[in-house]
Length: 278
Image (cartoon, rainbow, N blue to C red; front, side):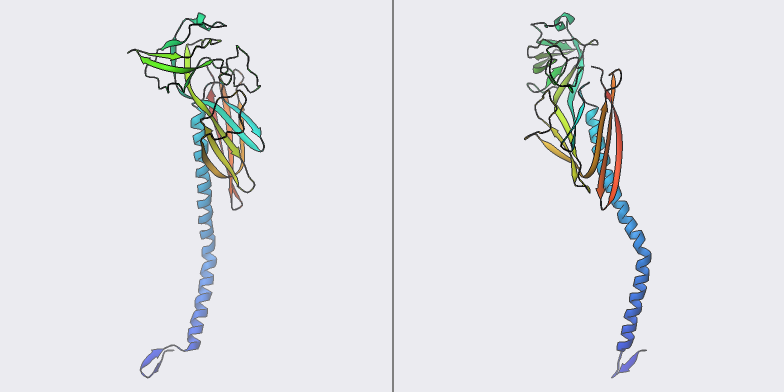
């Protein structure tokens, strides 16, 4: 009831208290009905964010692995972390050269060959030429005739490239390559690349990418001052399994990552076919 005092209209204190009480009751009822949709929205947004992070990380890994030197993918575990390493190729082509230069102990004059495919992208005095890579050196040890790029027995540092019009003439350090490629193929490799997944309880783990470090026979678990990039946080579990295949012409890399936040888990899996024809 509105009363008038000295020409001014207003509410009594009791009426104001009743209005406040009724407003609170109505707000409480409304909150009961909108609480579930609001929570559902935030849950969906959180799951979408976790899914996007995991999907982006797996796609990046798959893209890199498809550029791996044949038979260079290797996986190991140490100290609760999982390590995926491979030698990334910059380019590749076919060469022209006498196969007798590849018969052990090699041809002492083999420091150059012509590339049938022109305009091969190469970083001089940094990239290496690899021919007929067959082993990823998981077992360790380097034999003099083992075609393993990790051992350096079938690679050489490129010292120059001369464009001869119809082809590129590639010069490299003197190297007695142990085997010729049956299809006269070669690859240009950059530095190794490693993905390190370190899961943590409740989503406190990370997934990182390392590159720019030296090639070594044994798979590294420490990278010193090598460049690194953080691909994913909130990692609670990860699985990396690599099967080289029965004929070793094609391998299969199975990648699975689980991200966690607010007691909710999102798991994504991706499988990548790896070409191992050297």
